[in-house]
Length: 225
Picture 1 (cartoon, rainbow, N blue to C red):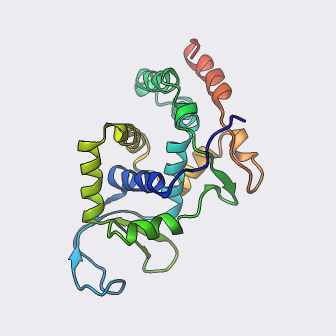
Picture 2 (picture 1 turned 90 degrees about the vertical axis):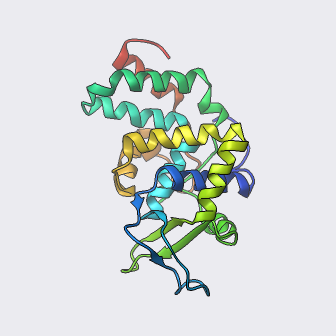
């Protein structure tokens, strides 16, 4: 396995969460959301949200492992999405030409339900700045993550002032374009299609799969990456 730094400072993690919520949210809420049970304020605000921690974790994994995201795109071709075959080819070629599997790789461990990293610290960091709000669903079976107005403003400000975050925006747009309608459980199933991923031992760092992606790309397109 390649050497790499750890997940990095909490600010870097926070940026990924903000961009995921901004570009990959399930859908805008249909009306104001009452947060008075969670805050002292009685303000009602309309927010974007992701409806499960599983979905948030699995999208974060694709940001941290561009080669695994490439494998997910190839799995679509294998399932018959031929109308986007040329588009997917160009996306994967750019990912590997730009050396993303090395530059953007941030190690993540596998838990019982796949790639996972505790969110408590980063969500507390964002919540304390009124950027993200976390709450249990009405039935208490899932955690919902809301992008608050300050979080939305922070993403838009970073986009205008910090060119280096453009990569996060473009990658989140791609994830949304191809996998927007999928639940966290469905995304997890796609990730488990890879034998290296599914065979990773509990609490072990998930390995990169550049060679496997290159082999699959050759099989599908008849060209080397």
